[in-house]
Image 1: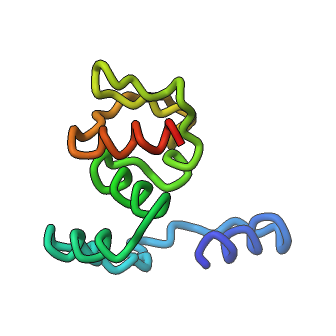
Image 2: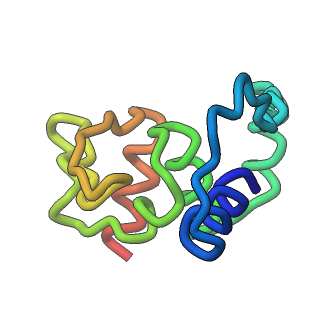
Image 3: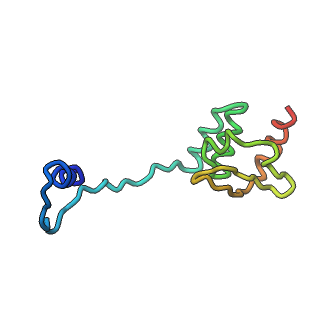
Length: 113
């Protein structure tokens, strides 16, 4: 809002505004993130099946974002080193994350299918 008023005076009315003094700007309220407990996560994932279960487990176990997980390719998964290469992640950056040992067998089964 302040920027809009300054723009109006400077460029539309062509008047310079003197020192406004200390201006209190609106602040976004600080909110704590909602985080599920381990038991809650297990309950949610246990209600899923098939590909959706594998995706949810990968999201939780690796810290990937949804689109990063959906864009995974076979060549991005290194089973021998238990690593997943995430390409074009947030900020268009590549990074490596670990593949949880508990998901390895399920992922191999999915890849064979």
